[in-house]
Image (cartoon, rainbow over all chains, first blue to last red; front, side):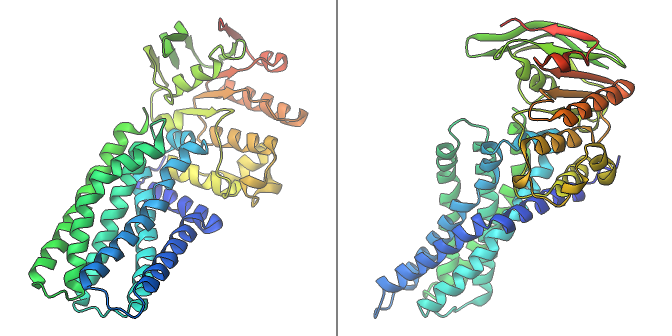
Length: 225
Length: 193
């Protein structure tokens, strides 16, 4: 027998990819959410200039809900469709977590890039510090994917999954949103010092590392109970 | 090979089963009988580690359970969007064992449906796929929950063949009330309702 973490993680990622590409449920939900959000904000701000702080906040709200609406399903659906037992029999918990987290990261980055382009384009907002915008977006996606994967994984074992996922998500995501908005508004040029944005970006990276590093261990503890 | 000692499972305040002890060796084929709701499926899930036991112990064959234990359960689902081949490929990658796709598809007579998504498979075809995934790593202990459910006569013959092969490889537990499947066993355990 040939044990390989890489092969196991890739097998889970491939399964998620094939399932999503054939059903398109998560990506379509995220896409529709993005389009509706951008359209609503553009319409509300017609003929008026929104402050950079509001634009950064609205962008993060859109990112957050777009991720939160589609990502936890990767775990919750396994339990609801009765496929979780198959995975429990043949897969190691860490491989399942990492395979799903990698797919969630991919989905989150794809949604965020699309949403940012649409949002900044429609609101005609220039990016003052592109590198900080990119770091905030990527680190934000890593953090978001890590946090919602963890929420979904923990809640999937409960009987009232959806409610528990939402309840766990609030305390986990609030600090992430604060860091994300802070970095994003500096990158859009709200007049504050770039060092404040850099600190937020570092905070986001730390948050991503923390959730992705501890997530597999927390998941392994609840996976077979 | 597989030892169950004073195993008990309680849901809420009700014992589903309690004080179950048995030991299976090479060639043993145990059939678990009992009325609906007597805990046959729960017993198999508890042995496989999918359901937490309330008391007692289960000693599985030595080694990684992903290779030494196979379970085919009625309520176990497959991925609707994945094809038959993709299922076998995935479980092999996760277990770290050879996929043996051609061999397994030949054995369960599903080669013609190799590229068919699970959502397009009939109940019987899905049952065959689940059997193939259960025996993929040549497990020492094989647990089958109502293996004949949804299968035609040919499918039942397939179960008989799998049972005979498993006898040579290790031990087998079948949860059923089917009189035909009952004949596959050389040991019986009746669960009280």
